[in-house]
Image 1: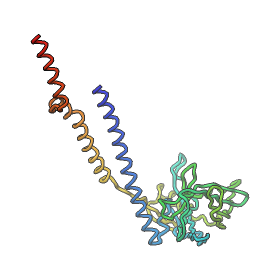
Image 2: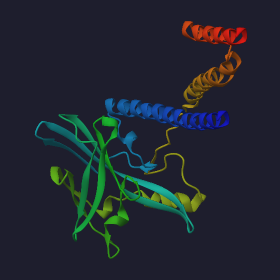
Image 3: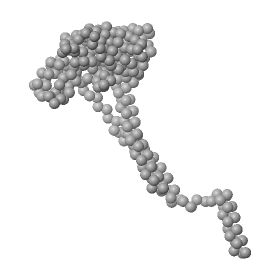
Image 4: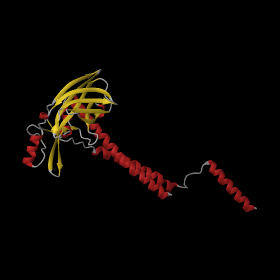
Length: 276
């Protein structure tokens, strides 16, 4: 039984250690992201909130939308990723949507975004409110990608001009934006392809016509280590009290008054039997 208890204790401790590590890591990373995003919003450095590695800092679309008591600044940027394929480095370009709420009650944490183009082309995305900061964007629910990729809006290999972006929740429209995002607005692929062809690697700095978005490095190792150490101290103390100290003190504690009376009765009964 003691062995089983120790095995169960060990399993609980292992699961607890994993939870302490993951919860601490996620909490402090999320808090750091919130602080960075809040600072960028306050300074109106919206281009720094683009999630793609490459972008043009000048938005291709910018419009203020008023809906009842709500006011939104809608921004659309050119953006691109570079992915490594069996055929070499491939540039994937698209549009990045950012919506900054200026006033009014915030939208739900998640909502629907429908992007419509000519020739009845429609692509559905999931909109989200980043940590309830009033900063909204959208992602592809299948790939988790945040760009309106160019190839999604091609029909018979011809790009179809994007004309509308509709926000809705539970099939109730929140607001609709009329846009005109044409093929001519895509200007990132050519300079990126030229750089790759010349250097056979991806650019890690700004190049002519393309801005580079360096990844944010968040180091929470010291905080994770601190919480893990605290957890292990608590665990070792609990182990000592449950399995070591308990064994050492077993039978050494003073008897309670009730137990003492029971023992006296047994001794008296034993003495009576002997006398008889």
